[in-house]
Amino acid sequence: MLWSGWGDPAKAAPLPEPTVGLLRDLLGVRPAAAPPVALAEIEIAAPRLPGADLNALAGIVGDANVRADTESRVRHTRGKSTPDLLRIRAGETSDAPDAVVLPGGHDEVLAVLRLCARKRIAVVPFGGGTSVVGGLAPRGVAAFIALDLRRMDALVSVDEVSRTAVLQPGLRAPAAEALLAEHGFTLGHFPQSFEWASIGGFAAARSSGQASAGYGRFDDMVVGLTVATPEGTLDLGRAPRSAAGPDLRQLVLGSEGAFGVITSVRVRVRPVPQARRYEGWRFASFGQGAAALRRLAQDGPLPTVLRLSDETETMVGLADPAAIGGGSPSAGCLAVVGFEGVPERVAERRARAADVLRDAGGEPLGTGPGDKWEHGRFNAPYLRDSLLDVGAFVETLETAAFWSDIPGLYEAVRSALTGTLSSTGTPPLVMCHISHVYASGASLYFTVVSAQGEDPIAHWDRAKHAANDAIAGAGGTISHHHGVGTDHRDWYAREIGPLGAAVLRAVKERVDPAGILNPGVLVPPAAGE
Image 1: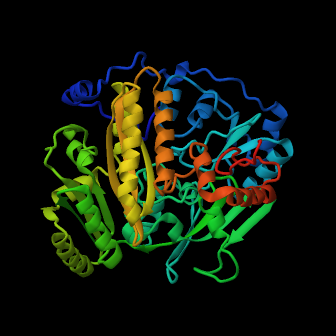
Image 2: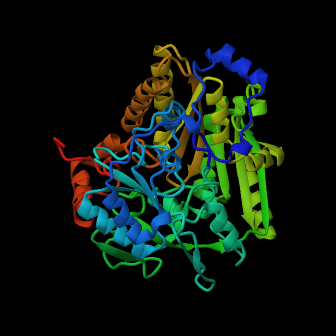
Image 3: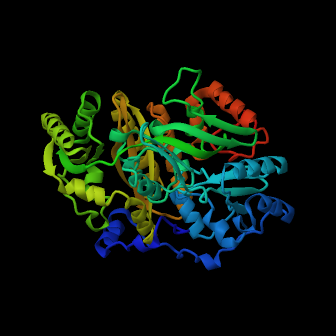
């Protein structure tokens, strides 16, 4: 992955000049004062770990699998939020790990954790490095290692009778799909981070893919977990569901490395679909489109993919750099509706869904918009890099709520973002889409574009705080799928309340008494800490 941006550098493309001009005229975007530093120019502090500790780690995983060189440490510094990228582009490496350790299996992970607990060395599990909520930047540590799980990248087994598979955590999503396809199966999990994210990361962050309407979230797919902690091993999941007490799998899912390191995941898989069809529908307003999506989510038929852009996102054409600003103000709202499965079921569900969508005021646009979305579904992070290159600021945030709260939540977050950024002299373009739907509610995914201004990180920090407060006040959850990390921790504490926070601290104390696992992430501190 590109060290100072997203993904494959070969896929990055400069913005067309008309788009650059539009950003300049509409939002006041100007080129950044200084270009990003080169990797060869990055300076980084010497590792804080003594040689004896590095040697002890090498004794567990092998000399070649303990790396303290500058490039390895830079590539494991923070995640891929816009503030993360702006900091690393400026050469700021204060959050760099002191070493990168690459274990080869569960026993090595367990041994590393026990050593680090004795030595009081913090450990940050590292999968694809795609966190956008501060999940890879621990707080208050004297030294820490990035525990890179890339060597643990096997498809361990496939149970064709139960339709489950056991995967190791460092397996990247495209490789997992390719290996499962050899057996005729798919996970059906395609988040925007798909090209680079890992199986362990999906589980640790409760990831949600773009086809969640049909396949479910990743936490819906998990039926078993093996977890290494400084205090031993958790081996969870003997059956799909159980009444044998609280389900400890749910304690690990979404724990973001704070309770242990996931070393294997048993997941539900499904047959590779024989047919896929994606199509577009136009609605006159976001409210009308949301009502149509709610009907499908509650009464069916439920498509595999179901998402709705608001008027601004539809007009801008965010997923296609060449089309930015090329939409019509009367374009309404674009819904993408997709179906996967056996051909006869796809045809039957399409026909029934079309009846519902027409009755709800939808206008069919054919397969063109759906095919365009499918082919560009992973492009947005590359577009962000191109926007940063010309001096624009672009960032995302997301939330979820019950259907009755969605209209108020949508307006509250838009108002908070627009008001806060405009007050600092960088009026934004705020776009939104419904990305995931349920019978009882949906998620809202916001994208914000503005000029970077004099201090873009502080500029976004104020806006993000205002948006987080708006989410809490309007009844939304602080995150639907990006996670908690350090960025959302304070609002997560408000969401679960003092007793909930105390429960998390108690779990942390039992599985990680030395407090080495991703310190400062997820778990709210006690008063006065």
